[in-house]
Image 1 (tube, rainbow, N blue to C red):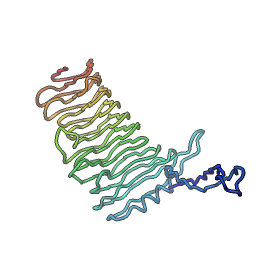
Image 2 (image 1 turned 90 degrees about the vertical axis):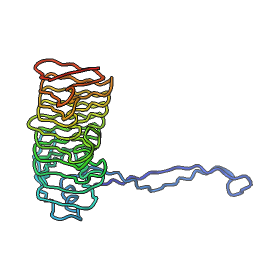
Image 3 (image 1 turned 135 degrees about the vertical axis):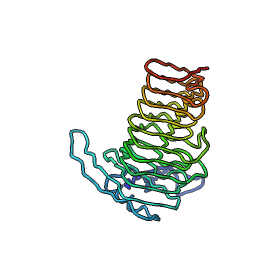
Image 4 (image 1 turned 45 degrees about the horizontal axis):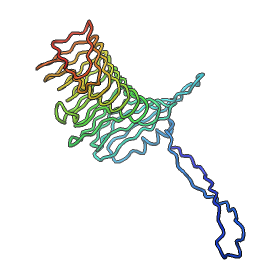
Length: 308
């Protein structure tokens, strides 16, 4: 991890005290204090490799290989590939603080019982899940397999699961793009926020396409003002998509089913749901229910609909 030390100079004026013969006039005294402020930066490829190597207390290991990128007209991107198998029983978080010119490709099998998150992604560089699995088996509260604090996450294949909480939590303004793989929750209450496949917490964007499979209490939950775009995949749960607040959901493809009713559910009157494609059905009740705006156009296939 890189740090930067900065020096701060302070200047003070000392006024003379009354009756002090040694201080008849004000004197300006410059006091220089070396204050070392530590600023934390994202890690380059070699530093990330060391961070992963230093992750201890588990059986097995994570192997990293670094491929140095070619210099282009704009930026040189190094690739860090993570493979092999790691099983952890302790509550230890793996933090990947990825520099903007580094790309991390995950192909490893990683199992843990970690409070809060198994993996936390920071920094502006990309994290790409391209195989293997990431499983957080803790099931006694709301915990996550992956939390994205900054930058983008791409999921092409592999398996992500958690006992309870969120499979993937997009915590900020970044983009989560899912084109394949399987995301599932084994615990939590069906139809509640303690069992969510993909949780969009803030103003970020979630894109779902391809042969993605998501199964949870809520397959996708858009909690704030963010955007969810669905053009493919299979989503199932007590609800397939739960739009909680004033965010926007755009559905142009995919198959969405519910074991109950309200497959697509909008809670707030300020939210927007646009459906222009895909197949939406509910085993019970209605397929689409929203207190906000709902716009439906062909060739969307919906077994029933209500908007109130």
